Length: 119
Image (cartoon, rainbow, N blue to C red; front, side, top):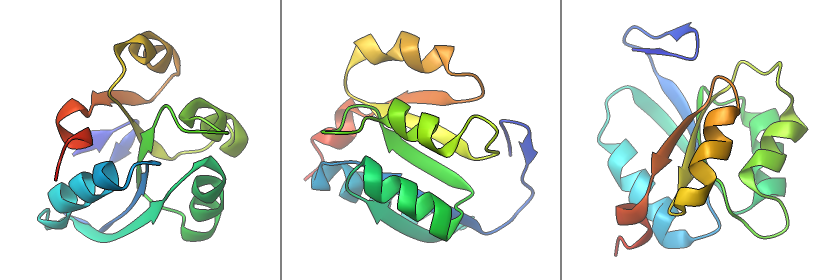
């Protein structure tokens, strides 16, 4: 797998899920938990927790909600710095954030409309 300049052969990926909605985190965790390349999954409920988890946990891959109270996903990215080699997948149910996410170099956007409603 190649993502944002990183080459991953079969390896154990440390993953962080950041979303203020518990059902969205649960849906992503459910999908990731069956992937044999994902070795560990951590969660954060907001931008401040995300920054702390990124600095402490040093994940290989982050699924980052764009719209969260107090600090959105773009603010999280600014806080950790553009020099970061972190691979981020922006997760949103709001189409209006797609253009802004595409403007953020090296990052990808993924729509989670189905995940936001996972029960």
